[in-house]
Length: 330
Image (cartoon, rainbow, N blue to C red; front, side, top):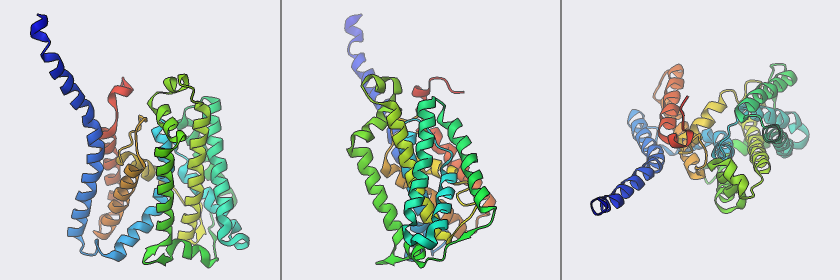
């Protein structure tokens, strides 16, 4: 019996290894294939889609989404979530707008500090209070949005400094300044995730919090740091968003949560945590932005666009989710 079974064992092991690699291949194949399909479909639907001017418009439209998604990538890789990102962006935009008259473009400082403070608060409650991130950030979303409504009273706060307009819409060699800023932030985020101890700790926490703790990783510090990083990036995104509209409004950032989560998940970072990449998030942001831009150029009903985005998100979760890690699906 032992002689008969021994040759089959290596073969089964090799097959099992191949099957284990398959989900990882799908996580990369899905966003790349979807991006190609969307680009071809929208170029056929509208000849203006591949024009340089429209490509730069897509780059501008992707800026705020990309900056926030880069921060959320760390949080989701660690197995957490943040539903308050849209409200933090609105609060940071409010800080930038109210200080723009005196600080000018240096209003990025209060905007960044407000975002950082919100992120630190979220992280502290989650880490020290041992409360699920979903619950904490859901409540924080309501609180931060309420603060924005309280101070604005529903009326927009205008920005008159021309430096803000140049920051977002100004161009160098035809490329928008805001897109260059977002690209630089993406490179820094990549370096942090792939080349620092903090990046490895984030992955370790997402891979297994109990095991990470046994290896000596300070779980609370990692959680607070990653939410603080996300808050800081939301602050920068708030400044860019206020520069885009040249005003801060109570509705600014509403619905941003869905687009950001969709971009990160579509880019191959599963909600179960442990794995993910910055380059995947960049791909996901491009997919979401091109999807919106292409549907607008093709005259797709705005209400139907939400349905399409939802379907793409569900499909991405279906492909990227690690069912073995969850154990029981509820």
